[in-house]
Amino acid sequence: MVEFPRTVVGGVSVSRMIIGTNWFLGYSHTSAAKDKFINSYQSRERVAEILTVFLRHGIDTMMGMPVPWLSEAMRDAEQRVGRKMILILTPGFNTLPGGPPENEPEVVFDRCRELGATFCFPHTSVTDILIDKRAREIRDLPRLTQLIRERGMIPGLSTHEPESIVFSDERGYDVESYIQIFNAIGFLMHVEVDWVMRVIHRAKKPVMTIKPMAAGRLLPPVGLLFSWNAIRDQDMVTVGTTTPEEAQEVIDLSLDFLSRRLPDNPLQYTRSKKTLLDA
Image 1 (tube, rainbow, N blue to C red):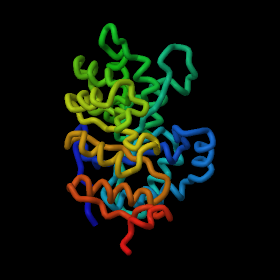
Image 2 (image 1 turned 135 degrees about the vertical axis):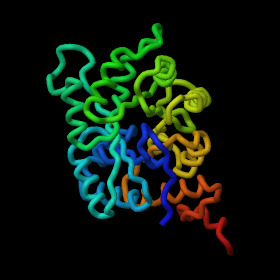
Image 3 (image 1 turned 180 degrees about the vertical axis):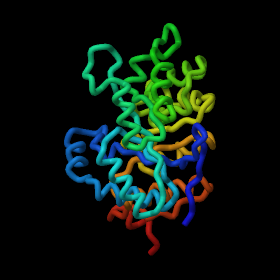
Image 4 (image 1 turned 90 degrees about the vertical axis):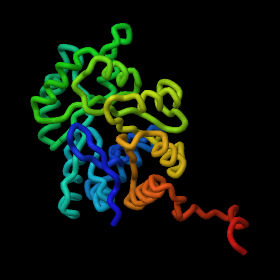
């Protein structure tokens, strides 16, 4: 079986395809009804089946929230395949004094370490409210990355605003990678696609791109073809799937695109396409 290409982040070898978890945890970016369906459908067992497909192709890196049952599904897949997974957690936490004690950064980072995280990247909900565009800095970040390092994890940043990457590089913050939204239609992106592409290519650290299919608004061949061709060899693409079959499909498509091959994946057949078939 072909092993998926790899890159290095903070001295750790990771797969260039990263397993996304929004379609495990009920964040469809579509509707409340779709979120409800995902939450009613997914389970530890079903997610473990999906992770097993990824692991068998050497895609051993997963990104998500500090959710215990998700880490349990990861352990299940590891047992089936006999291969360890690498966990990137993107927690949220208090950014002002007086918040819930269980959400203090130290407590949240302890939880991430207990769940087996190798990487800890403050979530965009934290990162982006700490950006000071006038001073071109990210407030409190040196203290936060120090707390992450003290717990044996590797720090990075999850962001929706490309300024985070620019300011972090300018300031030389202790981060090893960036998570940045990037897709062909600019879904949830703060500026035009070509601007974000330029920021990614100028970044001093590898970039983990997310939402390549714009949460289902782009067909997999379109979203993946764009992403793999628009990033650098050291950068990554995070892909969310709902079923093992979808996982296999995005793997096959990506391997073809990275090898400059035209995919031979099964197409969706409808009666209106009958005349496209051989007589």
